[in-house]
Image (tube, rainbow, N blue to C red; front, top):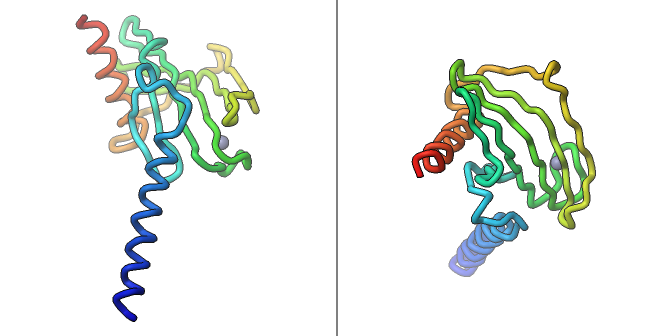
Length: 147
Ligand SMILES: [Zn+2]
C-alpha cells in the first residue's frame, strides 16, 4: 500500500514537471528570434535578436516576459509582457522605455511609453535578473557585431 502511494506521488511529480516544462515551450514566440534568457516558476524571459540595437555603449532591445498563467497584475491566464529597454554598458544602468501586454491571442491589453526626458536609468544590481539580462544582451550583441 505504501509503495503504491509512493508511486502515485512520483507519477504526480513527473506529470507536474512535464506539464510545466510544456507550458513554457508552448508560447507563440519565434525561437529563431526570441532567445531564451532566464526563467522563474512564474515567467520566462526572452530577448529579440532582430530588433536589438547598439550605439556608443548603449543597447536598446525588446524583452518578452512570457507568463503561462495569470500574473499579479493581469488575471487573464497565459499572456506576454513586452518591454522596450535600454542598457548603458558604460555605467551599468538599465531603463524601461515602454511596455506592451498581450494576451494569448496577441490582443493588446495594455501599453505605455515613456518620453526620453522621463527615462530613469537605474543601477544593475549584482546577481539580479537585470544582470542576467544584461549579460544575455551583451552576448547577442557580440555575436551579431562580430559577424
Ligand atoms: Zn501580466
